[in-house]
Length: 79
Image (cartoon, rainbow, N blue to C red; front, side, top):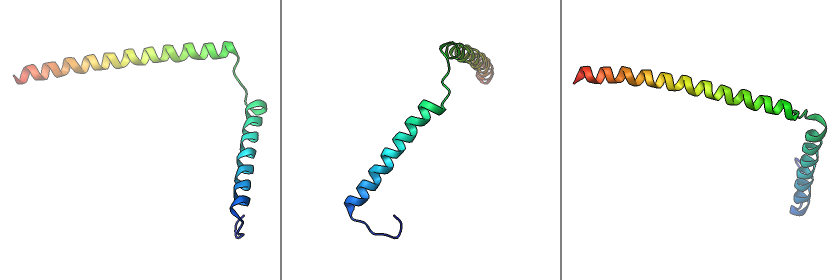
């Protein structure tokens, strides 16, 4: 509607049509174009994510503990 002045009611209808069209296109994409994982694939992915999270948490804990030890040595040397 560029360059054309329309009454507010026409603009609202045009906006509503755009919103409705967006919702219809989103629904069609979710139903027909998206490949959803199977239950087994989803379970496997969840296990991988949990394992990776635990490994990363353990690594961060080890780094934090080492840093704490180094800082204790430095503070004890200063005092």
